[in-house]
Image (cartoon, rainbow, N blue to C red):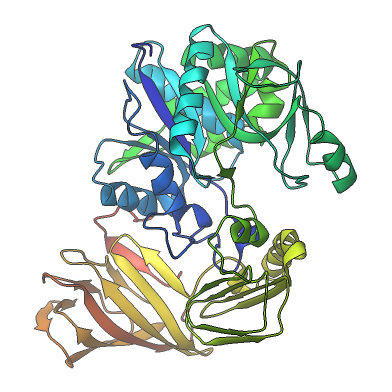
Length: 479
């Protein structure tokens, strides 16, 4: 392999709405361990599968501001401390994200090679994948813009397709790209997979940093100029680099395929046959999971009788299925999905409806993750709410106050350091404290084990935006 440095560029955006209710905007699929046999999240598996590549530099992670602490925490769980996180104030698709990462890499090295990967893909044969990446490196060294096309196994309508100039055969490394095809209908997809020139568009790329910047400047100069300004005006917050919002807002919302790959003469597609899936639907997840002899995948508390070819997942309650066939059933604390397996692509439409109707289950889980731990909403009404709060050892919530609610805290497990006004006290199991409306307060875990407590809120307004922060170690003060 070349001695040129390789920067992994990991695109961490996306809400994974087709895997609702498990995946939601507040905690999307790339950060989930989506199967019972999985030890790591899809994002973590993306990082782990490339760690044996030579001349690897620290990953550049492009993510939404809302997920910054999740990304950082999951990197630390892998014992990786060297990484760069670029924070997008909002999503603008892959062309701006890749442009930003390329510009950042050029601040660190003269002209590195970039390996662009999505954080939510699943690849079963890592060795085959790495061999294809090494092939891609040879083309990238010759100033080609490489994309990896997945050898199709079925007539999928959820993927775009790439047409090569020649049919792929055995021992073929790569061909020039003739065209890109948007997600086809079923009849068209069935026709495409019979032609060996077509592969699925994986959204993974490899190229030199200067080469992709040159092509972006040629075909989408506005994106390049906006990204340059967004980086030059960016600010560092802890170990996050926050892009300038007004500059980034000028970027077109466009994929790298539309912006560059469909127009450049330097595009190369290399076939990838390594058990790839983007886990883009419940049917896809069922297809890529270990099933029983009847074709069922079950997780959690599930009892089946005379059922086949179905996916059943229980997060909390018992699911009993009788005489089921081709069904998807997913139970979470606050929502249940029941769908025909073949209709699982339509889940995204339901999520869009929930969002338009401002139904909170469309976006957020009952369990909300924070940099200090998480909280779980147990029960609520218009003027009161009960939460279960878990704080990691050594962490603390911000010094804050509320205008519209008071709170009671009852320690269930661990030790709590509580500050209310000028008073500081240590509470242990079964001890409680009252936080009056309008009082400054802070909660910390000084112990060695997680702190768990019950919080009872009551007042005229109990939404999460009734928080005024005075001090916060995680940089969440109002800018």
